[in-house]
Picture 1: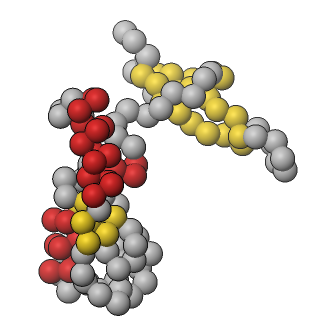
Picture 2: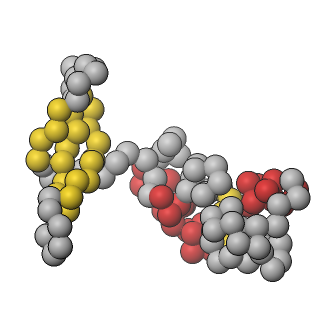
Length: 120
């Protein structure tokens, strides 16, 4: 069976020393092992393409008054529940106006075209 891999960052000291990178390897056992290795990006879309509310890749990215980008459906649900605070910072929002984020939309489209529409 092939080992599952994920990245675990661990500080290799204090001060100016860089953080060490470790590869997590598990063969299905409950006792994972760690070995030093190269950086392996976690599977799935980059965090910047995911809505902070749903943690899913955005279909219709919009910018709210807090200057964060959300998927329109999820931020509209947030407002429909009567919330007027930022889902990201919890600060009060001055407005519920949403502005399309064309750059994020094109980045999502590029990611999906390179990784298939079935990307998680």
